[in-house]
Amino acid sequence: MDINFWNSEDFDVFSIPGLENRMSALQRLVQPKFATLGEHFSLQLSSHGTDEFFPHIAKHARRTVNPPNDSWVAFSPAKRGYKAMPHFQIGLWNTHLFIILAIIYENPNKPEIAERLLKRMEVLTTLPETYIVSGDHMKPEAEIIQEIGEQGLENLLCRLQTVKKAEFLVGRHLARDKAASLTNEQFFSFVEETFDRLLTVYDVVIGK
Image 1 (spheres, one colour):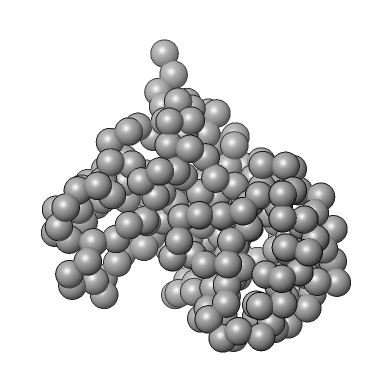
Image 2 (cartoon, rainbow, N blue to C red):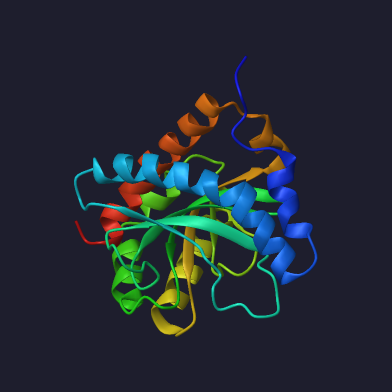
């Protein structure tokens, strides 16, 4: 019998009140799974040939009062840190799982990245209809690329060029019930397929 990778308890972590209790559950239930994903998918991303990728599990170490509302494992071509460069993430909110390529506000090269994507919009507009974009990694909401169209993408990318705190995330969301229904094999296949698609965007982002 196939075992499912995720379960409802993993997502329910983000409903536990209090920083200490939530972090304890996160470390016990979710972070070991992030470690498994980190080890496996850093190899897939590295095999693409652009960079060697290293996994980074979010520690939420700076938090002293408010518990995290989401958590993730990130992948970047640096052993230390990831926020200042384009990076991939697999993570959870209470409502859904996300697999994304992220350019967040710490990245010093956002204007150049936005310009490259504006010139090569087809790498975004040709993504399958389930793919989403967002301008804020602190919010769970995102917009489907097919629904906002080229104009919506241009708006997000122009903001990335000109607004200091602007961000750009692209990838897929998976509702918690759907994620919890997938076997190990199904989930890993889903992630592999998503990263394969996002690597074409990554190549444009880094100017390959």
